[in-house]
Image 1 (cartoon, rainbow, N blue to C red):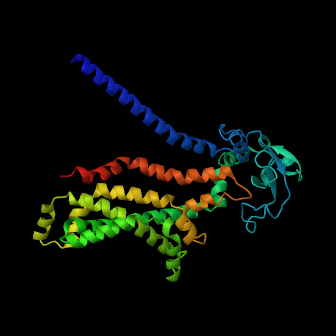
Image 2: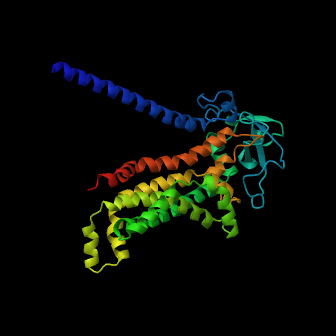
Length: 368
């Protein structure tokens, strides 16, 4: 008897150790790339080419950086309004970060500079510590955040970020609302044969992905004039998100007591009143689950907006991130910074609502 107990404990211990090893391995596989992406977004392109695993140095250790004075050129775009601000400026370019490529350029107001610096000519060099403290701190800060500033400015990520927010929020709202309504009708209303047919169609729709029908989808939207519009993109996202929403909602609502709905009807409530006043408040867990799954999927979706949205006004964040890659040049530092900008909101939302997500997924299976 004692030997059996010891053998059982040994098996449990070995099983626990194996489980912890698998979980730890999965944790490392998930976290290590994210950590690498985060710290590599503060590395210069030259550092990433030389050693992609090294810690960032060039952008942080910038107090003694050398800058070269350059003459005004067509490919050097001022960062101020030249029509309103006529003050003469000294144009300097970093001799450390991408020298000669006119990427890291600063425009210094000459009247704020010491005479020996203000009188420098094109081709002369100066160190960052020769500048006044305010300018030095400003340039140092811009250097540290160089990849993020360049990514946001070059790819117009602010507008694309808000497009992604618009697509994810509005599409998710309609997915949850319509999915919950259909789920309520299928679970609680007396349409057994019709419900069976509708669930079969919805199940078939769940198996269809955007990638598999992108060409006929584009032709159909072109025929009705909905290509390159926010409404057309939101409409497609909503249509493809409804099947999962209906399946989760139906399963959850089936577990709710029929007596609550019957009591509402006895009190004179209409089907819509029963839905909004009884069903919706009780379906919060599954609504959160559907919202997170749908919003994260739409936030990360790439192909639909790339094909349907042809103008900059309708493109989303993943398309903006992809724009940094080309056959001729790749700014890896900018691309990594853009990836962090795109990944961080999704991670924050997932971690904030992780508990509700788990509850919503399992709630339908534990109700009696």
